[in-house]
Image 1 (cartoon, helix red, strand yellow):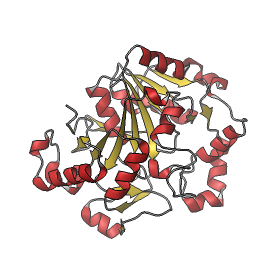
Image 2: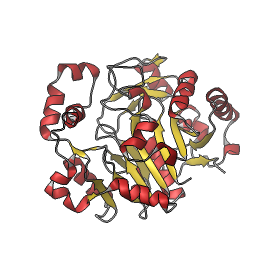
Image 3: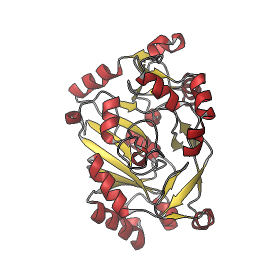
Length: 334
């Protein structure tokens, strides 16, 4: 399909970076547009090398994919250049929309000093204060920053013209739907923006009728960082025992763990208009799945878990992650 949206199903950490990197390689994407901001990292493993990306789109593995940061995004200039160097993407490959807003050092200072934000458990990058300034129409924009000049582009026109030409476009959502400022019901333990599939398309300037597929990304268990409710939460000791304990790729914060929630998965798929789903880290709860590339090679209990998730959510699970590498995927889309 020409235009796809990737949206996280829960509180982030679902493995969106893995799915995006796989699609970039497998589908030979023409464009990948990152939305959101610097306060979430997408982890990509390729040839045993790990990339934790806050700014550069996770599709960078494909040298033919044009990488864009959306008009609705917030850009941390220092982190952007750090990742450009890390990933070795060239100026001709990556662009930042002229109207993306800038996170300044003062925003990070405000974030870290805020007692409210400390209670909620924000990352401290300064995203909330930066968004607040943008809403007041006093923020700096990417086009105002001299060192970004070689990267400035009109992302909205590029992508829409690409869609007119039948190009393959992927819109990369950051964070998870349950952190949506408006829709998750978890306020105030949320992020400073909407994280739904609709908002992802909006930040990239793509109209809803131009989206062909919404891929909601589940993980075989649920994690979140920071404060706020987590239904079905288990203790850290239990998470360690099960092999579910994780540390956030971008911030190093410990993730809380919970059992997979079928009803929440169904509800969030409906709200986001999911046409298909990905399930990552199946090999964590079913270790014998590791490295499998065919559904037929999965053990019966893993197959039953996937079938149960499909039955209860009403969404076909077309991509199944069976290991950390970008290509450790069972692709059932055919």
